[in-house]
Image 1: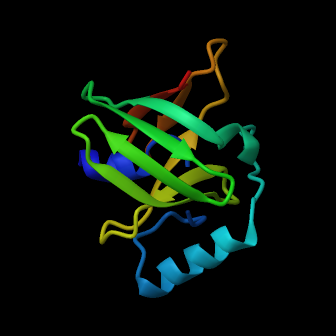
Image 2 (image 1 turned 30 degrees about the vertical axis):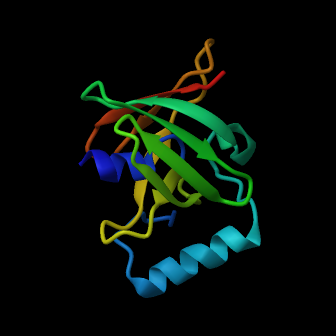
Length: 134
């Protein structure tokens, strides 16, 4: 479960955020290649860019970097590195996809708190907290 959440962590592929097939993965790559997509939510594409400290519901941690080209890298606390694509969807969620069988994992991302932290919420209500890395 941590691997799936890690792949999705920090901010951020398809509007429905469904399981991806090979065709869906190709479509995701095309979306990323087209450049930034602005979401209808209050959280913009530019607000997702950067490196984030991630704290999962179970207390485990990771560091995720979201890049302007739609790629991301997550380093889990165990040292495992996950790479993939992230994008905003028209429904206001942000999805991360490492290309694994799990498909994309999508979160609703809250606006930033005063300290810059954000809460990412899965459809099932599971929350992940991200803070800007310094």
